[in-house]
Amino acid sequence: DIQLTQSPSFLSASIGDRVIITCRASQGITSFLAWYQQKPGKAPKLLIFAASTLQSGVPSRFSGSGSGTEFTLTISSLQPEDFATYYCQQLNSYPITFGQGTRLEIK
Amino acid sequence: QVQLVESGGGVVQPGRSLRLSCAASGFTFNNYAMHWVRQAPGKGLEWVAGLSYDGSNKNYVDSVKGRFTVSRDNSKNTLYLQMNSLTAEDTAVYYCARPKAIAVALNWFDPWGQGTLVTVSS
Image 1 (spheres, each protein chain N blue to C red):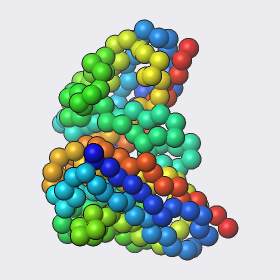
Image 2: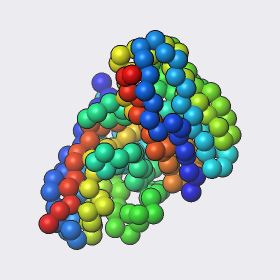
Image 3: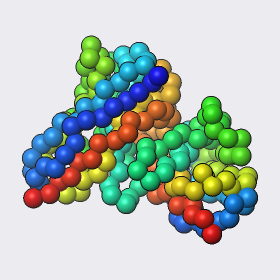
C-alpha cells in the first residue's frame, strides 16, 4: 500500500500568511495526487487534482505542485474561510489512501 | 445539480449488519464508478470501497474485505454498501463519492455526499 505522510499535522497561522503543507508518498505516484479541504461537520471538498490543477471555483490563492513522491499545497494569503483540515489523496493504485490530515487553525 | 445523498446509517450492535445507500441525481449514474469513504469520529479519511461504472470491478480496503460488499443498481441510480460482522472500529461517518471523470475509477473525488453516521455499539 502507498502511505502518504503530511507535514505538519497541525499548523497555526494568521490571516494573510502564506502557508505550505507537504505530502510525501512512500513510492512514486507520478501526478496522481489530489488535495481536499474539510470543514467540521462537512464533506471534503476537492481543491487540487493531478497534483497542480485547480478545481473549478476554487480561489487562485490555492496552488499545488510536485510529482513522484513529494507534493505541496500552498495557500498564498490565508483568508478566514481557509481555516480547516486539509488532506492529500493518492489515486495511483488501490487501495486509495489519504494523508493523515493537516489541521490549520487561526493564530 | 449533481447530488449524492446517503442513507441507512444508525446504531447497530457488534456482529450485526447494516446496508447503506447512496442516491445519485443530476448526472448519468451508469457512466461513473463510485466509491465509499469513511471517517471515524475525530479521525482522518479512509477509503473503504470502489465499484466500476458497470459493477464488474470491485476493490476494498483490507480491513473490510470479506465483511463489506459494494454494489449498485443503475436502474435506480443508487450505490449500496452492505456491511456485515460490524465491530466498534467500523463506527464512522460514511460518505459516497463520485470520481470526476467518466468511467475511470481511480480519479479524484468530486462530488461527495453529506455522509451518514454508523455507530456500532452494544
